[in-house]
Amino acid sequence: MTASGVRVRIAPSPTGEPHVGTAYIALFNSLFAKKNGGEFILRIEDTDATRSTPEYEKKVLDALKWCGLQWSEGPDIGGPYGPYRQSDRKHIYGEYVERIVAAGHGFRCFCTPERLEKMREAQRAANLPPKYDGRCLSLSAEEVTSRMAAGEPTVVRMKIPAEGSCKFTDGVYGDVEIPWDAVDMQVLLKADGMPTYHMANVVDDHLMKITHVARGEEWLASVPKHILIYRYLGLEPPVFMHLSLMRNADKSKLSKRKNPTSISYYTALGYIPEALMNFLGLFFVQIAEGEELMTMDELAGKFDPENLSKAGAIFDIQKLDWLNGRWIRENLSEEDFQHRVLQWAMENDRLKAGLALSQSRISKLGELPDLTGFLFKSDLNLDPSAFVKIKSPPEEILEILNTVQPDLEKILEWNVGSIEAEMRAVADRMGKKLKVVVAPLFVAVSGSSRSLPLFDSMAILGRAVVRQRLKLASQAVASLVGPKN
Ligand code: GLU
Image (tube, rainbow, N blue to C red; front, side):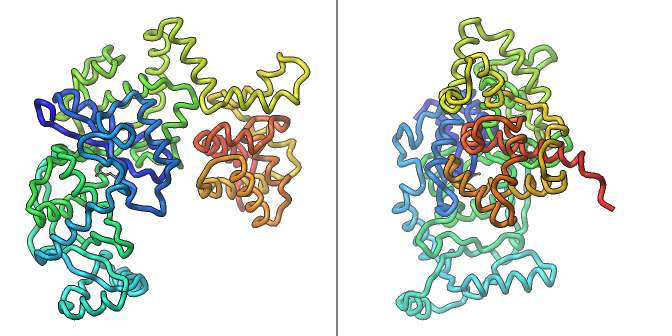
């Protein structure tokens, strides 16, 4: 335990590509620990077994390490309060759920998914917020025992006070009051015996001695449930701080449909981690104009959670570009710069794999930049005319690009085999030949119709870059399609 006793954490769920929002919250926690002489730890929250994958867990850890964030306890390095992955802690939670049930604060629920769906439908129809209606609240102990003995699937839900409201003070939002009426009788233990996020999160924050919970504002509405769980277990809740989400320039929530949100996108384009951290860290400090270029230590020195605004941090790519440029030009030695360039080129085996694909296609080495350049470019500067050579009319190209984009999101493991399988499935579904579907993709991904093999190139570029290129291609092609009558 550190002198200050302050312990904070980042608790990512490995269910998708690491998001810049995760880096933003992680940075806040890391700076908070640094400023207070505390510990910053990492816990993997994988209670959602259907969506969590080891591949994503590795990506989250790699991405946060790439950012230069260092935790003192975590699934990769262990620590005194491990294990740090919730699926490895399954055996821990049951006892806490039982304590809540035994004290009369929780109850067994046997409602089937079909019944719950009907209930929600009726609530929607009556314009009521969807919420468990409490049907199983009054089951007798005998009935519960006999239904469980008969093997009926069951979950444990928490009871919610019938009246009044939950009042708490949030480090960012100040005094908050949420009526109990707005809080659902949350499932704590699922039918498969796994805890829900809420249950595991509270138990782990307690056992890992977390003193301050700083996370995204989307969790603010869950605080009443968490406070109740702490209360039901006779435990003291930590201090809560809910950070406003990052937003697009138009104030909408930062989402991959508008802006690339994957850390891997920024890595692939050659942003340097110090600049990304500098950019995100500026939301947590108050500085005068001209002082923007800051290292992580300088950020920690000036860090002040009081500066946080509820308005949200605007993800201004131009500012990030400006900072990145300044970092490259002003803060890297010549040697460091060269080292970073090589590191970046070799990342994800990009250079090696690109060369392997090129060898059979060139007669002089000097042809390499033209052939492989698209694997490294941050922007293809795609001109709509690039699509004119394709046989399909613009309407068909647009339809293909728009169909492929959501399909690529379905791929679980991003590799040549899975990309090819998905593309064949799209072609089948659209009733088109594979070659018709891939022709526009070639141009979208590489900027040219004569290039390296498409599926390999997509695998090398990574999902985040491919997503962005297809989006830009759709926009370019849309400009060729006349307005609908
Ligand atoms: N697993 C949650 C997430 O990924 C963490 C929320 C929290 O920090 O409590 O958003």
